[in-house]
Image (tube, rainbow, N blue to C red; front, side, top):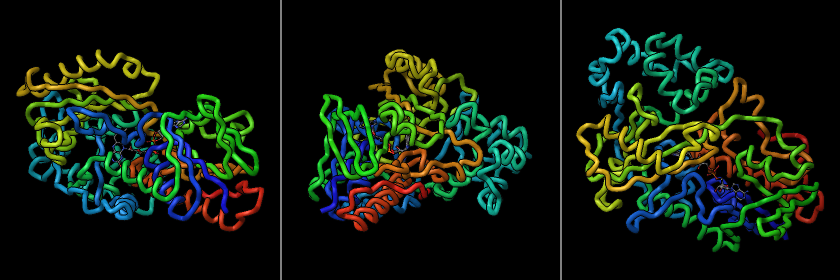
Length: 444
Ligand SMILES: Cc1cc2nc3c(=O)[nH]c(=O)nc-3n(C[C@H](O)[C@H](O)[C@H](O)COP(=O)(O)OP(=O)(O)OC[C@H]3O[C@@H](n4cnc5c(N)ncnc54)[C@H](O)[C@@H]3O)c2cc1C
């Protein structure tokens, strides 16, 4: 009988890992700190409907996630819809979808509009064969699009995700992102919301004999060559033959004991967190799923309107709009009180959408998350930490490990498949062997 596996973290990566292992007959215990599963894809209740705290959608290219949904019997429950993009510059919201939209996009000079269109069409191909992992995004894009487009559009737009470090992030990130989006305007949303996927994963794990525990923050993690000992908040200890941690690396360092901390990858990635405000509106905003917001006097630099994708009936005939700002968890904005952010961002939304009045805003909720986007340095592909912690039976499966793929549910599911495969291989090779530590040889 193979030994127990503990999975720390009940976001999509932990849930998908546990699901895979249980299906292969391994005894699994999943431990989640929060009282809800789902991690960054988790939800809250508004008018008896479950709503994601952070906007989420599925792309047609999300093959690992779609295969998982197939296993759960949910693949046919993804609703696919064409979605549009807008662009708010200087407080004016413009459509940004077709060649005609681009030609009418007066914030750019005509020559820049044409150049923007041509380069954007060819961008994926222009990156082929180049070492984009070692090329700064700014160097790559500025060379192709020119200084004006870089300053007016690209630097603020992509800087919105990585802050001031954006220019230094490897150009490979953007190239991969374009690959995920594949010029597709079609997006998907699970009919029962992301909660239905989370619930189905929990049901599958439990039906296979796995244990799922919530409200059990792991306070301490120790690893010897042949076991892992987890100490929970109330002092309870759980011993396991193998463990998988999906906890973001900086938080993992906070719970690892000294010996384990010394074995963790010596990669100190900065992370962007997010401040994200949800507006439940009594009328639609723009009909565009996504709109960057540039030079418009707002703290948020992007808007996502979910209703064109999900319909408004599920929100009590209200239209759901997310405003977001990616920022460090140490920033002033991140530390600001939620109610203050809600008030100020509501005023700012009304200032750029003059057709909207305060009476149109039915409900406002603010959510934050501290670890969302690892900010990768140049050459991260070669320096990416291994999923294996040498000399221990602990595997790491975090958003810092999915690069060059973009952080998404799809990438986490793919990573879950990798770590589950390694663990199964080891468990089958040595079901009775005491020492299960990973060798120093790493699987990246
Ligand atoms: C604003 C926003 C928009 C996004 N949009 C999309 C989108 O449209 N499509 C898409 O596919 N992806 C999207 N993502 C990205 C996606 O949500 C993440 O990539 C994915 O959820 C990461 O999953 P994870 O399981 O690796 O990490 P997490 O979701 O962070 O899960 C980690 C879990 O570990 C738990 N944990 C931490 N410490 C402990 C501890 N000590 N003990 C026990 N448990 C612990 C946490 O509570 C959490 O549940 C978005 C994310 C954000 C923030």
